Structure formats: C-alpha cells, structure tokens
Image (cartoon, rainbow, N blue to C red):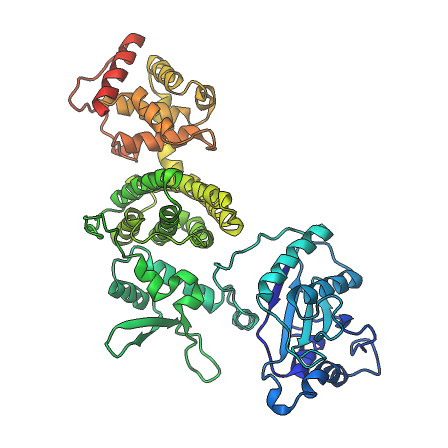
Length: 571
C-alpha cells in the first residue's frame, strides 16, 4: 500500500471537481464518498441534493471563519492511498477505516479530537482513494503535520499487516524523487514509456560514471544532447547545474529544467565533486592513463571488483558505502559500452542498482577510486564487440559484478536498508540474466576443448579439484560446466601454473556454494589469476613459461610437493 502526499493547494473546489470528474484519462468510475469528518456529510456522487459546492463549503468553513489576513494561502491537503496490483479489492468500509487511520496517523484528525481538521475520502477506482482536508482546525488553530509523509508510510506498513496485503519495502528517505502525476500524464500523452525526470536521471548518472573532473562531466552532458544551465558565482565558480531534454518544454515553450539534486540526492554538484576527492594517505594519482582496448578495461574492472569484495567483507561502513556507490558507476559504464545482446539486461542492472548506491551511511571521501578508475577505463576504451576477447572478458566481469552486487545486498540487509537490499538483489538478477549471453560462446569452446582432453588428464584435474575443494568437488564435477573448468586447469598447467594451488586460492578468497554454477565461477577466477586469455581462441596451445611441458599426469606425491613449493613462493 502506497500513500502519497501531494502538493498543497489553494482551491478546495478545484480538487473536489477533479476527484468527482471523469479523470485525465476517463479513468474515474463511480466516484463517491467513503468516509468524512462527519458521517452525515452529503456525497456529491450519490446524493441528488448535494453539490460539489456544498462539500467545498463544509470543508472550507473553518478557513473562511478566520480573518482574511490569517487564512493560509495553501490550505488544501491531499493524500492518495493506493493498493498494490496483486492485492484483493477492498470494500468501501475497508477504505473508510483506512482513511480514518491515515488522517489520525498524519495529525490531520487525531483520534478523539473533536476540533480536528475537516476531511473527506473519495473513491473513484477499485485500488485507491483520495483524502482531501483543509488545514485549519475547527478551533481556528493549525494542525501539527511534522513528518506526516513518514508517519503515513509507517501507518501503511501496519495496514498491510492487518489486512494481509502485499508488504511494501519501507524506505529511508534516500531514494530519488518519483515522477509526479503531471509528469507521468505528460509522458503518456506523448507515448513515452519514461518521464523526462527519469530520462535525465539516467543520462546524468551515465555522464558522471568514471568522469575525472567537472569539465569532463559537463562535456559528457553536452555530448548526451542535454540542455545545460550552470549557476555561476560572482567569482566565476560553478555553484550548481540544471539540465533539460531538448524536446521537453512547458506551456510557454521553455525547456523544463531539473537540478541534479531533484534527480537524485547524490547527483547534486557538491555530491558529485566528492567522488573526485582522494584519501590523504593516497599518494597515487587519482586518474591513471586510460587503457586502449575494451578487453583490458574489463579485466581491470574484474580486478577492482575483486578487491571491492574484500573491502565489503572486512571494511568500515563508510568505506563500504563508498565501494557500493562506485560499483554503480562501473555498472553504468559497462552498460554504456556493452554489445547489443547484453545491453538490455546490463542497463536494467545499472538502473536497479542506482537505488542500492545510496543510504544514510555516508560514503567516505576518497575511497572507491579503483572502481571509478575501472569505470573510466570502460568508458574511454569504447564499446566492446560481442565475441572474442571482448565478449569473454565481458562474461568475466559480469560474473564478478554479480558477486559484488550480492555482497552489497547482504551488507544492506544487515544494516536493515530494505529498499537498497531489494534493489541490489534485482541488479544481481539482471546480471545473472545477462551472463549466458556473454559467456555462451567462450564457455562452449572451453567445453569442447575439455571434452577432448585425454581421460588421464581429466582424471588428474578431477583429483586436483577433490584435493582443493573436498566438500564441493562432487557438485562441481557433476555440473555441465566441468569440461570447461578442466580445459582451464589444463591451460594453467601448460602455462606453468599449479592448478591445485590456483583452485585453493580461488576457493578460499570468496564463498562458492552460493553460486548457481560453481564451475563457471572457477573458470573466470582461474583465467584471471593465471593471466590466461578470457577467449579460449586466443590461448596459445601448451605454451609453457619457464618450464617444460608435462606430457603425462604427475603422480599424487608430485602434485603435493609442487603445491607446497608454489605456496612458499607466493608467500
């Protein structure tokens, strides 16, 4: 159940006429009163003797009783309460009880207060009601409406429990502002699926992803085709900015501008500038030279995501919040530069994660720079092709970002950030959906290569898996992706790396049993750790770095000895 407090108005009769009228899209059916401050209030929808003006005069009576100089200019209070689409249709009596609970919870008409504000609840559709009230009490005083929106939300959660309705995830005030009804109706009239506010929010978010300076940010806004207006101080410094879509104009033909803070709390210019701050102990430059190839950029993004996972596991809250916020930039940059067959799901993942990137835990300044540099590399390396090393490294980074978004969801859940946790889970679901499109071709090649391995080498690599991951080995070996993992272990072997050691490292750094396909996860981790090409076609067959090729599987004691030696070298 979603309560929404609308802008206060100055004309009671105008809102009443709207509520009892046909609606903007002829969607008001059978408008009628379900409850009011006085049970005997006549209903213009069902009482032949009642008129809109009659109801207006009853509601405005306390306002008109005040001297003209004391009457509030904006005295019309308007609250809509909407049920979820999957909720059952409530009766008029149910909606009447809900209306009384809402005016009591918000302070418009507290229970037992005989001098409270006058109000009426109108139903003109199955799934919602509108409550209109005048903000002068019968005793001439003004009501106390401090935090009425938050109190309405809290009461809605109780109503959901009492009536067995869908439980809406509670917010914490850090979400981006939703489009207004007028904005949605305007978009509908134009046949647009999204409002200008939503279009602008996404455009600004993508423009700031990986930007290294204020000028680069504004250059990207201009390149995106937005109309930009800066607010300049007398000193010449930029204080803020507003943006508009070229085709979005008001009745006067002027562009409809939105400030960054009206698009999202973290898109104001001061908050954007915080992204470019460095930690005092960081002596490295905040911007490294951009890589030239999309595949290299994706490898760097994978490594940055891996390090961010460790921070989320063990870091302080402010530092974790910074990593999560920077993850949003990587998702935006990846979606912008992705190939067509993965773009839709990656864009959906970035849009969903936007809500997870903000909470009341303020991001610590200067942290998350590795992820932001990765986002910058992705943007500056240009769009990636869907096949070859580009496509395979896209699968690699999607796999790692999936774990990163799940880790963010778990952290938000521990902090009781319900909306953020839900948003991160949605982003993870979109990444999971994007993964097969990116991974299908390289994994198929690896599967073929693994299936052609000699049985002796297949048994040898299976033994390595059982030694490194004894509790998970049976599941891994039974997965369809096991031949691809076997092929990767064989490539690592021919490159002079110890497969058993790599397996142990890949498994101990992060849990595996939560993965849907553990063998796929291990493939990408091993290929990244061993420096193998993500695309199997780029692998040089049986290339050995500094050692001779092994033509037959070593004995078990040789595996153990080499594992120990390799471990000592890595320490």
